[in-house]
Length: 244
Image 1 (cartoon, rainbow, N blue to C red):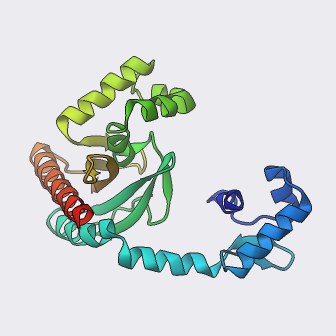
Image 2: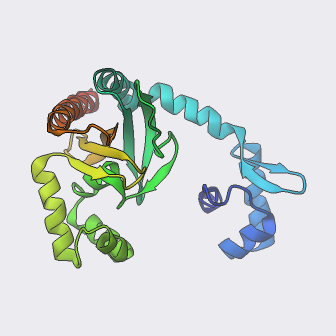
């Protein structure tokens, strides 16, 4: 049943029962039984002559998440302060399955646009927002990602083999942040710092997207200092929340 929900992605938002059966390789009777349960719960909805799509309950759950998630509640004011001081877009992202999901965004006085919109998942290998999370994963998790995405690592200049990739990510951990140029959105700088829980496990990242024009050493240092400080504040907030 969960696999039915996993079918709905940005590239394929509507599915007919026939398409679902072909993808999931399950009997028609089983599929329709699951679809009936999901429809009754409001998680999917059917449209005549179109098929199934995400249902209204998803929007309701999104509202609950925005109002109850301690990461968003603590991160929102930090992002607002960041983009007020440094013109750009602030992003709060969570590590989710094998990808990174934007859960909150704040825009300052800037004309740039970020491809990282709330609710949009991105690959774990692309951009500073994702890579700073990748750099703090356990070695076993990293090896799995490398097995799946070795060619992407090579194309992004992160290393030609697993050892070189680990060394590249080790440098990111040492400096405490990651910086990328135009990997996700052309013409912008992405800077990200890690966010941890009470057990020092990486749960997400705090990021700034800044116009590349006029990005000098002074602005670079200011952005990195403010961002890494905010990420530490958010980590401490999450640790206090876990303890309570």
